[in-house]
Length: 183
Image (tube, rainbow, N blue to C red; front, side, top):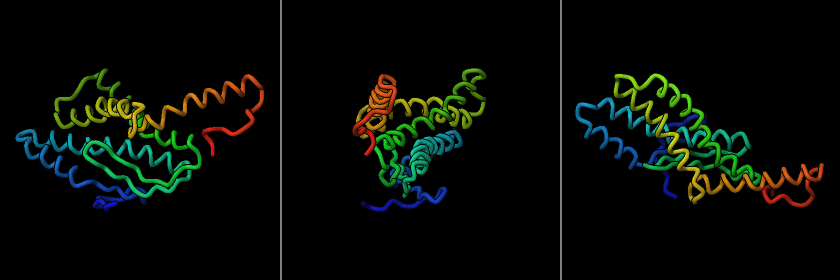
C-alpha cells in the first residue's frame, strides 16, 4: 500500500491525509471569496469531524490492547489501522466507538444551538454546524449495516449479546459451548 504523507502524530499515532483532502480544502477556501474565514473554519472542522470519528476507533482499539498504527483521512471517509482484536465482539466495540464519540460531542452542541441558536459569526456557526448536526448525521450514516461502513461490524453484535443474555437468564448459569463472538 502506498504510504500517505504524514501530517502529524497524535499520542504516537500517525495521522496521514490523502492529497485530495488538501486539494478539496484549498478549493473550498479558494472559492470562498469574502467568506474566507468561514470557509477555512468549515474545512478545518470537516477534517476535525473525520478525525474525531477515527479517534473513537483509536481509543477503543487501545483500550482492547490492540496496536494502533495510523489514521488515514480521505475526502469523505477515514480508516484506522490497528492490529486485530482478540474477539469479534471486540471488533464490534471498535466499530461502535467512532460513532459514539461523535455523538458524545455532537449531542451537547446540538442542545446548546437548539436552546440559544447560532451566533452572528459565520466561522463559529460553521464549527457548530459541522461538529453538531453534520457529525450526528455522519455517525448515523456510518452505522448503516452496509460494508464498508462501521455498521456492518457493529450491528451483528447486538443479537448475539441478546441471545447470550437470554440463555444465561433462562438457565441461571453461563452458557456452555463455544460462543460465536469469542475466539
